[in-house]
Length: 133
Ligand code: HEM
Image 1 (cartoon, rainbow, N blue to C red):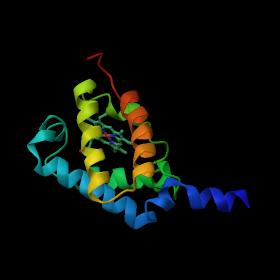
Image 2: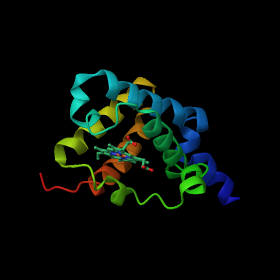
Image 3: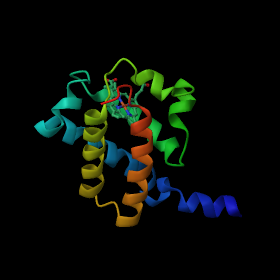
Image 4: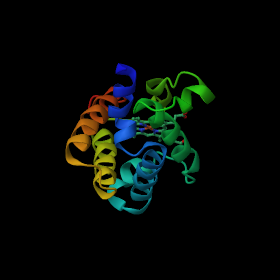
């Protein structure tokens, strides 16, 4: 019983399930790729963003409470370890969050959900930081 109720309230469902997660990731990387405001983090990525798009989509599906697609394919994400080869400080963290915030706004994520997701994204992004400033 509670399982069903929890599943219905999971951010994954509120966001519109698989299609919603795809849309968010597509908008996030389209923005990062096209707006020079995000150049500081775009340059850390490969020229071809298709792998980044696919992996963020797979990861967020599970992270938001939906199917654990990333773990099924690749095992534990070891997210912090995988980000160690990129210099991530406050500036990079904040650019990532700004880009994600704008993506959420542009695809019409409703206010309370958007705020909740922002807080969760903030914690994860700050945890990825591997430089003081
Ligand atoms: C804090 C600022 C962040 C920066 C600068 C950053 C940057 C990057 C870069 C450059 C890659 C490599 C992409 C490629 O394959 O070309 C990557 C991979 C990835 N990032 Fe981030 N990231 C940040 C935060 C986050 C956050 C908050 C999440 C999740 C909520 C996340 C999830 C991922 C995932 C799942 C991958 C793929 C990992 C893999 O190789 O399997 N990142 N990130």
